[in-house]
Length: 279
Image 1 (cartoon, helix red, strand yellow):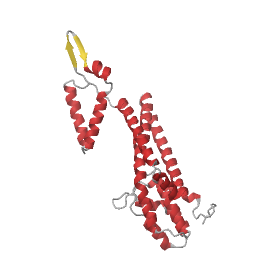
Image 2 (cartoon, helix red, strand yellow):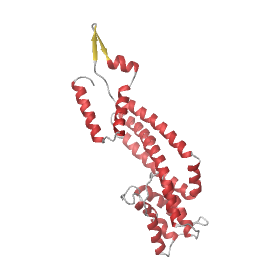
Image 3 (cartoon, one colour):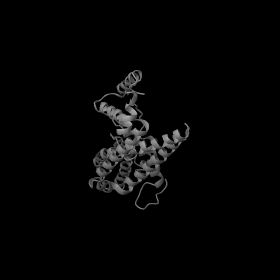
Image 4 (cartoon, one colour):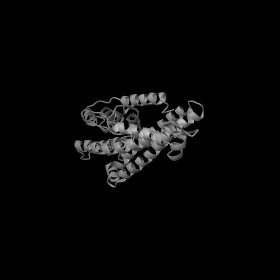
């Protein structure tokens, strides 16, 4: 078995990197209602468990059983928890008195906050910004596929680099650094900033990609008054796309399903087109 060059450590750097890659690659496979990502956690420990207890099958089974318990977090932001769990299991294997419950409890206490910040930044900021940029690349090129290729490559690189770096941060920093990060209120500031940025991004997407125009006109004294051009565009540009978006958001808040909302939009579009209310 290969030896680790790091003094006082049992796990080689190569095994740590394989664990980080396993987590990011397979984290969202084998979900179930009982354990959620628990199977992925246990899978992550496969490259390292043999270094922690090389000649003790019973302790290997005990570790894998413990790491298979219920766990659910944002994959990329939560990878530091797995790195932390690996570090704690390593210290335990080296003789430090760490109760099994402590490892489970610290994973449970961290997964909620990191899931919140991860979902907000990843899905509310990063993905919409990249999609907006790459959609513009596709549209500006007359429908070429480069936008999709650029998006896929960038997301792949960002995902793996960030997740692996975060995993290593959790392994090296330990629970004290992560808890200090949470207790200082930094996470709340990040969430607030990400929420504001997310609103800005969504506002830009609404203007660029939601198209709603009014076709009503009023004939007076031989002139034609267009509600769209003379009122909405002049006084409140893009108010109709914003109104449609906020209306859909309101229906979602009232627990309408996506199918019902789509059907309603189809009906409004058909009726509005027939009576020239919408164009």
